[in-house]
Length: 471
Ligand code: FCB
Image (cartoon, rainbow, N blue to C red; front, side, top):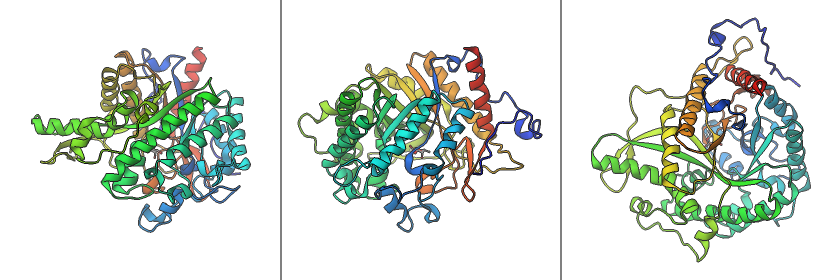
């Protein structure tokens, strides 16, 4: 197997531009990131890395269908091969140890582990058993997400997240996997970013299943969150020693002017991105402002649903990427006004570490019952290339350093944050954008499947080795 991923301190290129700032990443001595009990890891998701979509009884998922639909993904790309992780998982896990990570966040592919009748697929389950077993042998903490967007297509054919029954099917899946994998998982997240599933999948149609009816999004969200609550019950019953929670994406919205209408627009942006998920989970109700933004879209809520949804969680996973500057749209909502002269990534996303700090501090003030937080995703895309055997991703190095500093500031302001996962271990299939955006700390050559640790990965490994050495 071609696998060029060694960290060579005596590399002949050392001292070149790529390595001229050896301390460009390592946090300052007073940073909470040096604390031994602060966990540092890397994250991936099944559909983005596994490939092997037809193997060992895996069923089709909504992302297979969506990406095979012309015009949905840039260049018509799909997850059919992706990083071929299904076959290369052992050497990919070796990368985690080479990089000195302490934890790994992965997701299970629902269509791999259950058949249409809800029966276990032994081969699929065995794959995750072996993978998690190896992670445990390596001494890594395992953070497993059940639903990172790859809904079995047969459930979509019955209405997907618009069908209340899908929430119960998610709980069946949680029940099955937690019975089969008990003891191998330190932390279970029921859902990844329900905002993306509901809003991008059902209102905007930029993600699978590609529906474009604004009224659907709130109902889809309700069923996703109901599925979360039901799943936590199943996970608690089967695997009491692990942590249970949910991973959400959060958006920072700032106002384009002091004008009250623009201030209100920024507030509504954050209601739509954050409170839509956090209020039901932590307060047991949907934010009223959401229905000012989207009048008449109240979901059908049955008696007892909100109690199920607001089941207590052991942790909240927070994913953060960028800030949005908004103004009033002159009616009920907001419209984005991209700022000039700010740093952006390959995807045009604004680099704004303060947004992460401010959100975390804000949530801590708003929700008295905010559980301990893990930053379950943070990172950036750049158009990285291997040059002379090395990948210089200096923008990512600065990005990660600044965002980790923002996390440290939030901790010092009193937020209980227990860990940070970089998105991502590997370059991978970036959903509707295809393979061009590269988020990994390890570069993937999709023609040869060769992996090359980027400069950011080298500096993370160095910091984590120093941390370990301090004991
Ligand atoms: C998040 C997703 C993750 C990845 C990053 C860049 O929204 O959870 O799978 O695509 O964005």
